[in-house]
Image 1 (spheres, one colour):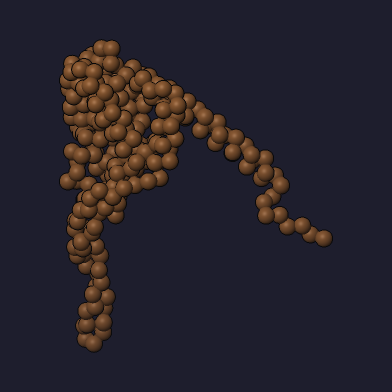
Image 2 (cartoon, one colour):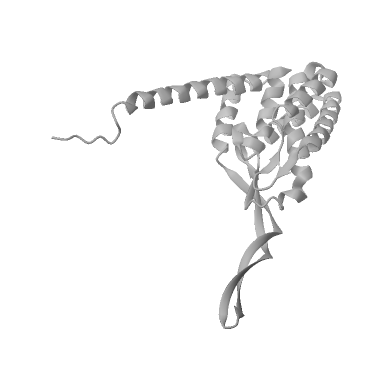
Length: 233
């Protein structure tokens, strides 16, 4: 009698190893992100909840705008010559719709956290900290805009390590006792404003049917810039 296996028996240990590595990766990632949130003064349950919300929100994109652009396309027309039909390719322009969305985990979570901290500082009367945060965000946004490059078919590309280094430098220079908060705000909002919003007009010419701000979720530049900046400060 011949036995047929849905999976070869030797593959079972590899499946368990993969699941174990996935669980280990999730544990390490959650620990790193939670530690960064705790440095911002958030309690452990809130920090862990934000991490889970960021992870789940990575799969949710909310459309916020629609742009139209014209892209070159190749068409074929028929030409008759001495009774013989020849296909002749030619270039034409076609209208393309580009949907611009914002990712919940990669953009809305950092934006919500920074907004919460701004309101908290305002209620505490920490106007000096708010002013320093605004200055840091403006400088980080200008620096991010200088190094950000639109990549056709992909989106706005930005070296991952540059925004955290800028945010850390600003936090050390002007952060004072609010260094983690200044680092997080300038790291996240610097990328969001400088790389994405300041390149808004260029997004529609990237040739992609949809562009998501923070679309990589917990692995997007906006999210990672804030987390790395807080850990490095």
